[in-house]
Length: 224
Image 1 (cartoon, rainbow, N blue to C red):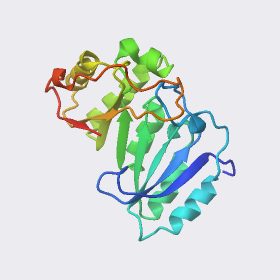
Image 2: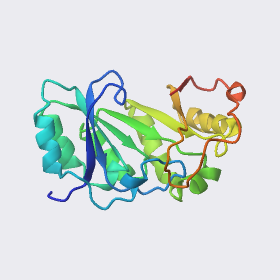
Image 3: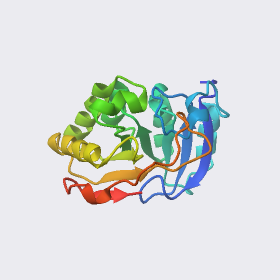
């Protein structure tokens, strides 16, 4: 466990884990190449700043100060999270996982072993645009994760980053329809693209406004 798989640690956030005070561990690497991703340094990184031991020592010093931790990235499920989660849970912390859902086997195992408390599942795009936006052909693996979490009645949210040149209101309406048909009835979180100096496809601010008024009321929507 000496490899530096943790790119960095954010010591405190009250935004990333709903209703909780938490740290964030940013794990190296990703199995997607989302066009709008501004964490390209993390996505392409082979090594981070911290080892797992560093992370566990850090969390040990936060007992009684934080409610939990967010495992994010990159894509944290590229790494073996079970021993990490088990030790963090033994300290008494809650664990939130940010994931694209392409590793359903590990996600199922973590949930079934009660090693994860909350998941934010990124719904990148409908199937027709999934490969173009993410660089991945593994849409059905995302669906496998989604279906499992719904069937399990696990505490999770679905979220989508919206760039009006990549996803329009019709796309989002179809995505909501897909979610609803599969049994997801909770809030659907839409995240507005934020232009940064660097992102994977070097895309800029959308050339047009997103037509929010064209969204149907299939699911409750919250914009972030």
